[in-house]
Amino acid sequence: MTLTAPPASTQATSLPPEMKGGVTIQDWRPEDEAFWRDGGKQVARRNLIWSIFAEHLGFSVWLLWSVSAAMLAAMGFSFSVSQLFILVAIPNLVGALIRIPYTFAVPIIGGRNWTVISALLLLLPTAGYAFAVQNPGTPYWAFLLIAALAGLGGGNFASSMANINYFYPARYKGTALGLNAAGGNAGVAFIQFLLPVIVGGAGVFGLVKASEAGIQLQRAGYLYAFLAVVAACAAWMFMNNLAFAKASTAETAAVLRRPHTWVMSFLYIGTFGSFIGYSAAFPLLIRLNFWTDLPEGGGVGIHFAYYAFLGALVGSVARPFGGWLADRFGGTLVTIITFAALAIGTVGILLSLKALAPNPEGDPLITVANESIFPWFLLAFLFVFTATGIGNGSTYRMIPLIWKAKADEATEPGTPERSLAQITATKESSAALGVIGAVGAIGGFGIPMMFGAPWVDNKFDAVINAFWIFTAFYLVCAVVTWFVYARRSVLTDKVPSLGHTKI
Image 1 (cartoon, rainbow, N blue to C red):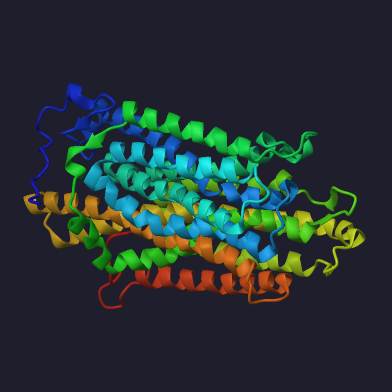
Image 2: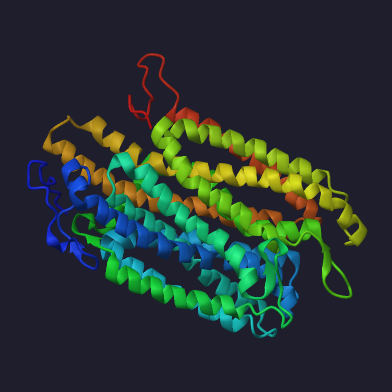
């Protein structure tokens, strides 16, 4: 495809009438301050709002099983600990793999068009879920298939971020992408907070009691199927495609050849992979370590439904704050500090777990004694979730600026070549957001799998070993961030990969 320079800022800055919702916008110049001030900002904000709504639903469906898995026993299903952890891990694997084609779909089909399609695809896992949970005879393989379809919701993040990246100027990308991602990430907290209430399984710190009629998981499936239709209709009526954002598959795939794509993917495993992996496993970790079922029914200890949503909530709220910090102080510095905080927080979780009295037989008295450790476990985990949110925002702020820096380094200011290079950089960075998001989400599969490791007989030991590995990984990520994006050459006083540009 032949690139043409964007219209000069000396052209009329009034927005054309074709910028209402539901149409393709032909002229889009977010870097033109007059264009942005005279209406571009409002159009971008409208697209951001409905993008957040659709992505929020995608995340909720993606993590539907993170809470449901801990409630299946009450519905008459008998699955092992390893089977439950696999059930919450499978959506994360599919969600990671599906993000690459979802990213490529935006420049080929259009951001608005793909938001409609991806929202309607959520009908598959929600309808399947509602059907499966009502029949105790549903085989485990069917649950795995439906859980895999829930991974489609994870793909919405990549396409949404790639699309919104086109709408905002570089100076606001950190905040805009942070808000977009936070709205999606909040879907995890919402599903973990609301699902126990919706299905009659208790919640809200015990203020809402379990339904006397028993748990009805299918209600959640019906509700989110309805909301998926609402999201598709809203995207069709209120969002826009951008004409200049069109590209071929080959042009989009060019990002796979960029070294920074893979460096940032590695770092994003540490931030977003941790967020989604811990979010998926957190309810089960609470149930397995701080709850014991009683033979006569019910149980003693900490009810996971009262606290499971808190981790995803603080991580989601922290994400736009991470983008803001990165806009203010630089994404590299914030990311390095984030990985150090993740290592410290993970050690805190380890210390709290090691303080637990072993309880392989599920003795209620030991469970009650271990309850005093839970506040420290929760505090350390919330610290980790906060760090993942800040790191998610700072790393995603770095990505478009890295591509812009490389474009600026190769061209002269004020030249047509600079304008064309910046168009290419925007397209590639949008594709990179999806690819990096896809690789990072693989961490969401690896974390629950390591916690439930079928190859380790003692499940408590599996959890402890996993946290030690995660601690070491965060330290490696901090070193990689410094080496690639903060280290300066003694001879040139430049960051070797980025010149003088501060990322």
